[in-house]
Amino acid sequence: MDKIKDALNQAYVGEAKAALRLKVYAEKAEQEGYKQMARLFRVIAFSEEIHGARALRVLKEIKSTEENLAISFESETKVAEVAYDSFVKLAEEAGDKAALLHFSQSKDVEETHAKLYKQAMADFMEERETSYYVCKVCGYVADGLLPDECPVCGAKKEQFVPFE
Image (cartoon, rainbow, N blue to C red; front, side):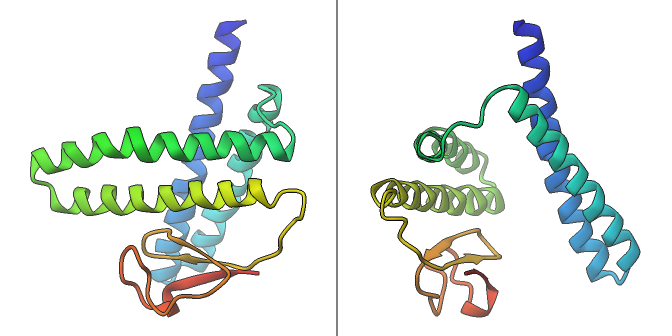
C-alpha cells in the first residue's frame, strides 16, 4: 500500500510540474508568435492537470474547504519559514544574486499567502467577498485593492492580473 501511495504522490508531483512547465512554454511560444504551438502546450498542460487532480482524489487529499484552508495555511507557513529560509541562506553563501532575489521574494510572497489563508479561515462562515490582484513578476497577491506598485518586487500596477 505504501508503494502505491508513493507512486500516486510521484504521479501527482510529476503532473503538477509538467503542467506548470508547459504553461510557461506556452507563454514563450506565444511571445515568439507560434500560436498553434502555444495552444498545444496549453492543451497538454490542462490534460496534465487532470491527471494530477485524479491522483489527489485517489490519495484522498481533498478534504472539506475548511480543512483544505487549514492544510494550505500550514503548508505556506512551513514553505516560507523552513524551505525558503534555507534556500535564501544557500544563495547568499553561493553569492548567486539572481537566486537570492528569487528566493527572498518568493519567501515574502509565501508569507502573504499564509496571511490570506489565515484571513479566509477567520472569515470562513461569513464568506467575505473580495477581489484579488496577482503580480505577474513575483506572484504577490493583493487582497481587495490594486496597489500602484508591488510591495515585494516594485512592479507597476499594470503587471497585476485581476481575479474578481
